[in-house]
Picture (spheres, rainbow, N blue to C red):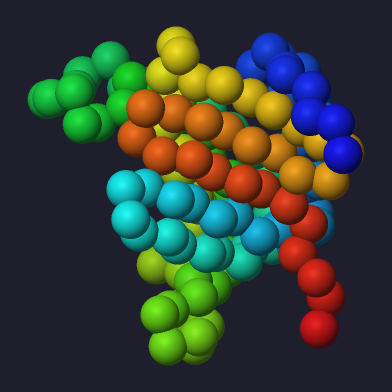
Length: 118
């Protein structure tokens, strides 16, 4: 499947088509991988101009909705907040292959796809 590079505007437009759907978010950061399943209700962005340090992102993508986190024991635990935040940088790469979105940042790699219904 061919991946296409997107601008953040193109990424936002395509991802908004998934509002109201169940999505799976996979994050790989260093040697750690996290998986979250959520009912995506909306997409927003935050802008943090009062950062204390460089660890807090200046810009972030917020996937709003309720969900569950897949634990190392393959159990699903309730998601602790009503959004999933992905830090965005000027160097973030946005890709899409008609089934999955890929965000590549300096901190980690994120994949967003429609979740399989059980």
